[in-house]
Amino acid sequence: MTIWRGKHNYPARRRSERILDALLLGGIFAKWSYRLGLHGSLSVSHYAIELSPEKKLASPLRIAFASDFHAGPTTHPQIFEELFDEIDRQQPDVLLLGGDFVSAHAHYAEILKDGLAGIQPRFGKYAVMGNHDLWVDDTELCGILHEAGVNVLVNQNRPLPAPYEAVSICGLDDPWTGAPDIDQTVADAGAIRILLMHAPDGLLLLDGQHFDLSVAGHTHGGQIALPNGRPIIVPSGPMCRKYHFGRYETELNGSLIVSRGVGCSSLPIRLNADPELVICTMY
Image (cartoon, rainbow, N blue to C red; front, side, top):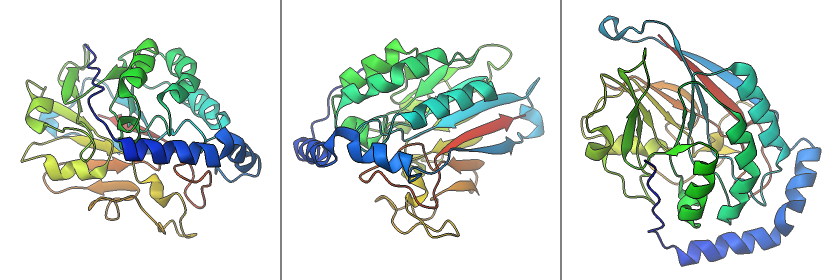
């Protein structure tokens, strides 16, 4: 069952997001940025996740992870079509979505609905909310995602169907704008746990809980980075500069994969931080 909250109220942030929407002329700047190649080129990053011998799966599990769409004035919708086409080509078993679906208004998620609905991985689609999602009407946003067949997890976990019933997708609420509860998130979870969270800062809240794989977005890889990929600016959060993009082996907690995300936040420009789809093969 999807939990629809609508309990957060950030009037100052909502006003600033709507001012940004007006300044960017509802997406006109994003349109020209995309046409000039300033949204970057969608890339696919592949990772192999090897489980310990006692947890070996009967067959590999193929996981797609996409995050930080930012549908709205900062991101041209064509990048979403490219993403959905690529997910379809990759044929994942399960799709994980790391939040920040929109900027400025919840209704911008309507742009994503048909594309998300058209993706039908055999073991489902799961999402968490990001900070931008909780600055808008998250009840409306969750409704749109639900119509697209996406299960929104708010401090919840879901087991995958056989033959992967030992695998649980654990969705932790956003560490700063949500109400994260790690004990509730892992309650009755299976032996193999995949942590789905919006920001790497969720690692600060694990309180000794173990996960075999963690995935996060939020950082955008800096969105504007040096040619070597080093971010010039990263979002606030104590773990965001340490874990800004790529794969990290965390102490006692398996692999953390941080995606650069798909869309643009605040400014409709990406430099040296291309949009990204992550594919993890767990075996």
